[in-house]
Length: 390
Image 1 (cartoon, one colour):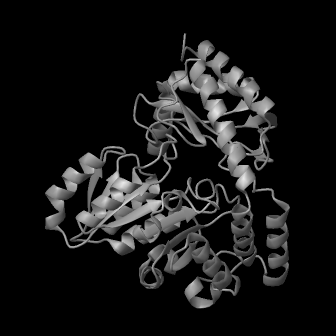
Image 2 (spheres, helix red, strand yellow):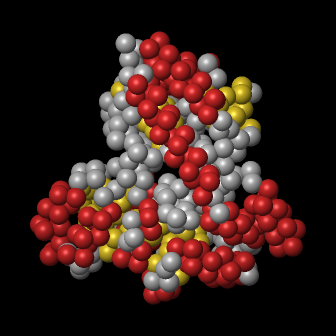
């Protein structure tokens, strides 16, 4: 244990040691962290559905009738009746052949990538892709080529150079990047995967629910539909629930049922969770007003931060980074903000590159604009106090 204690001490000295805090009412605009009430700019509850009565009612009723657990993996006896109904509904919602639920988005990414690629294959991923994507590639044992963030020209160069050497090629990107709030050039990526005979996998964790006429995601909003072979998403963000999914052709879903280790060897989601997912999809379909309000809040809030001299990067979505730079300065900024009543978690290496530590603000549609305007003033003032801006 001494070597672990030494490692933790080094992390603490570098300002990189993380600690758990007790949260209460995290589904609300105001959250209690270790007993202090703060404006919650740190959650992914983009449409405010985590506390929605319809989801709670669906989860409660299904738990009473079906019990608290699935009791086994889905290939044994864990595939309770709600699964088929919700997966069929999800496929219709996405406008694609079929869908498959996973215990989490992490399970979906790791299990799908490692099932679709292996030795003799190659995976091309955006340099800022989520850790679950990277882990899936590592587990696949395929060769890995990273292209510069949102740089389709660099991807084209890598495909031209390396694609002929491999059996299968998979391109993986997020649609909305979780730490930068910018969006992938999906139209260009579709053109490249078709040119070089590759598959395209898009992680819609932060895009589904927010983009699309009924919240289907950025792929749908851009009219790309079935041209993206693998559409992944989660229910733990805009849908206010938990769980992950893959949507695609019937053959893809059948293949994953037979090949995805994180699906095969994981206990199924409880009946209550699956029922809540179904209710969440229906709520998202009807959430046009919430999506509109979220966009308006986000655009106004971002402009306030920029007017105060903060660097919000290339963000165009509900995720707004404010780049602090060095870890120590950013940590101090977060501490001052919490003292001032705003919950904003510092994002530090290795989650983001060295020298690019930031506070990540994620808004929800159900926040009052007066609260957000007040928070913007606090953020700017504490940035000055911490030395982020002069």
